[in-house]
Amino acid sequence: MFDPSTWMSYVFFVLCLVLGWGAAGALDFEGILRRSTSWRARLLLRIGVTLVLAEGFRVFLSFMLSPMLDLFVGQSINGFKPFY
Image (cartoon, rainbow, N blue to C red):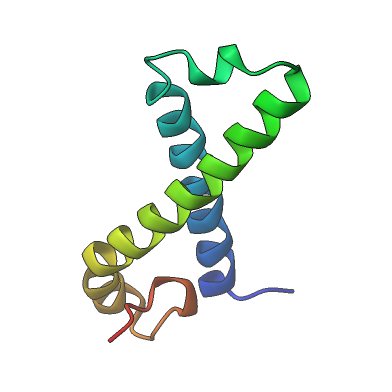
């Protein structure tokens, strides 16, 4: 159905989301998320921070991983292409 490079791109995206979610929780050392009034506000704030951090992880890891993956896969992977 999907070729391996497509699956790798999806796994990479999910990995960046997981890293962003973890980093959003780790950055809450002042308790900003716990001071919000409702659980919905805390959830929306954490999701927003997660998306921003996930994009940062995606760009950073793309620059780090794309040359190595191009060697192993032998073709360019869309999710891992660095922006020049």
